[in-house]
Image (cartoon, rainbow, N blue to C red; front, top):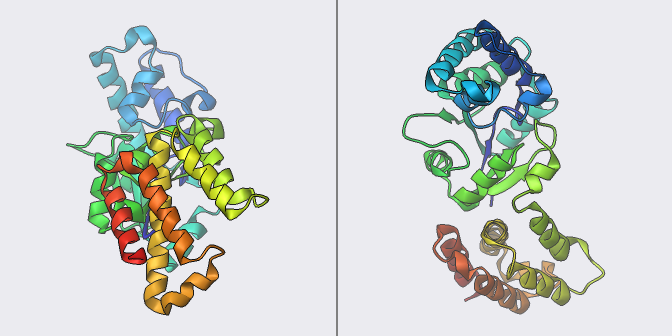
Length: 305
């Protein structure tokens, strides 16, 4: 069961690209370099401000001295003008409010500097987030999982209880690397093709096998899913593991509340479900080094033994 949702900031919650572009172009101009269009900046951002500055500079002027000078000029301007044109995407405030009402914990996880991540989040969304985590000392930027795992630990949730929403392939990789459920948004800076680049097409194929082709029998749909798992790759397998763990945790809770009558709501009863989750555990056994897999195995034993 999902208990927390982590959100990327720029391009997911906040449409901040124009202010980022304006401040960078002012810094470039001050140093005598040409600027860039807003469209170009959509592919410069995402890995933190220092990387944004590096990408914006001419290739032959990316030495440390020039990068440091440009970064200093950028920060001096952006600290003042970070909210000139930046705003929440339509419907985001309402979405966050509904998630909060539903009892979910909410957090921001951004490659933006901690200072600016906090400023943007508080200016646009007040105190709705339980935690705002930006780039900080001792942690690598996404897609490295360290900061994501730190946020989960701070919120008191496990990876299988967490979803991470973002607009880039890097966000999807960060979610998978940390064992969380990745959620790609299509209103931000990047495209659906980028979100699917690393593992998306395989995941789409698995989802189609598992949920959409209702012309197949239950047995054939599940057998097709299990067959696809054999060559879907580790990232895809982690996504499926997180999904199946969440499903099984829901079943476990329902059993505690309603008892064995729960199985009446499944087309395939307890015996077939026990077989299916046993097969999932076999297919996902390459993930046996992950806590998420151990949780799936333990929950299956609790439910079916």
